Amino acid sequence: MSSNIRITKICIFCNSEFVARTTVTKYCSLICASRWNKQKVRNAKIEVSNKEVRVIKSITIEDLKAKEFLSVTEASKLIGCSRRNVYKLINAGKLKATNILEKKTIIKRSDLDELFNRPRPEPPQQKEYDVSECCTIGEAQIRFGISQSGLRNLLIKHNVPKIQKHKFVYVPIAVIEKILS
Image (cartoon, rainbow, N blue to C red; front, top):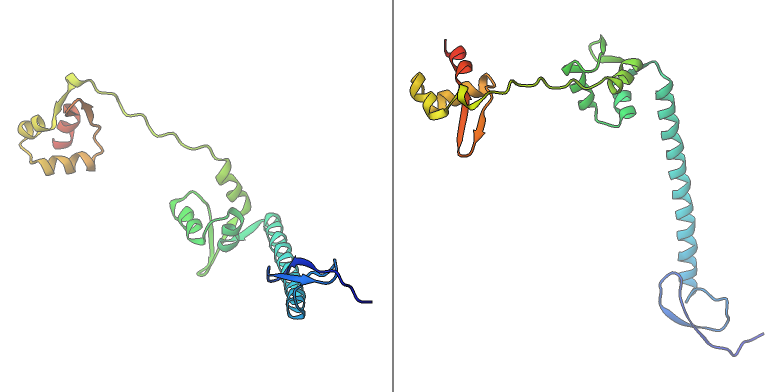
């Protein structure tokens, strides 16, 4: 049965306009129809592969949560950071680990959990000094006979507190005397 109707449509695959003879036509040519079907099959295969990968990843994380002892690589996957960061935590003493062989470092799961439950230590409060107990940096240079860079290096090395008042920087006299004596 032939049809005399002519409908302007847009191809699903190439988005070009074409004249269709039926209302259900979706593609402008046989080539576009076959390419669309091939693309659907390809996308279905990719989606199946992606689902398999997601399932495998979720299973591995669940397995890691069940293990009592973890390697550095497994610990890094579990916390979501790099292996280098896990090694830095071990070297800093924040994470306990045992080196069984030269190339095998084992971390106890409970130590890894304890890392996140441990309260953060508060930094020690520095003593507040009054400006009357302090002298400016220039006065300290003259008083102790030391160069500007020498005084600066001492202040940095011994972590001496500085007080900024307007345009002057004050340092405690008692602390500098203790350092230089």
